Amino acid sequence: MNLKPLFDLEAMPGNERHDNGFTGQDILSVSQFDKEKLSYIFERAREMRAVVKHASGVDLLKGHVLACLFYEPSTRTSSSFIAAMERLGGGVIPITQGVQFSSVSKGETLADTIRTLEQYADVIVLRHPEIGSAKAAASYASVPVINAGDGTGEHPTQSLLDLFTIQDELGRLEGLKVAMIGDLRYGRTVHSLTKLLLQYDVSLRFVSPEILRLPLAIMNQVIDAGVDVRETHEVADVIENADVLYVTRVQKERFTDLAQYEEVKEFYKITPEIMKRAKEKMVVMHPLPRVGEIHYTVDSDPRAAYFRQVQNGMYIRMALLAMVLGKA
Ligand code: ASP
Image (cartoon, rainbow, N blue to C red; front, top):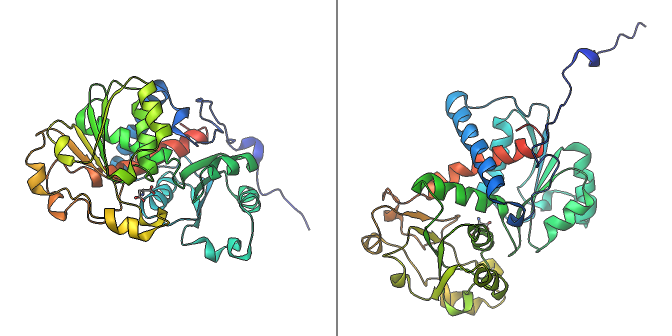
């Protein structure tokens, strides 16, 4: 038999990667991003938005594969990473419907699962209930690992999309008054966004029930950064001055004592009545899912930005995937 080579590799364009400072890098924490890097990501995200609006998608990541490994439930983070990869022409291994359908249910360790997935994939997105799990996974993997939430630790890609949304909606990041409301103790999105905001000239207001106050370690970082900060239990104390109202869900799954959860679960509800006292130009945001803390009748308020925030998540994740794979 005459075996003729299937491919002429010499004539084929190779997998050139350009080094943008992110190529091959893990994305584990917001501490990796300074203002210059943030502007770079946001500029790329705007280009991604333009290409989706213009052409739905593009072949920038054709032939590349993303493994999406989720040990905790997710709607937006998993779907937006999948949509992002597909709109860039890549493919996805979706382990997002519950690791019970993977070998994890047979007792496989995180290390072995990661070492397996990297044999197939060029990049791994991981959500896991333990703080530090993404960092551990990155130490096992030779491909980039992106932290999609490590327990009550961080959720860096969420806070990138949050910051991008604030800039998009209000046209600036400097000089803003940002109020974070709800579960500041367990809310990893609050932890990451707070750290990112410390790079800007902002004032921060933290509104929570006593038992859900911001962890001391993060509050100390806020104080060290010299930011104007105050804590309160009352939305009424912040509503009139806030440029950004960042509302979060009380995270039932993080409580060891459910009686405590019952006590605080309905502490806040943003309603049209409350919104009457807010500035005309401000935004209400939420990482979602909401479970009652923003009333549905607020959705038609033009200041309610949470679904635009969801869409921005896809553009930010398109930018990040293209960047870590050296294509943007
Ligand atoms: N979706 C966000 C997270 O994964 C917020 C939440 O679950 O309440 O952290």
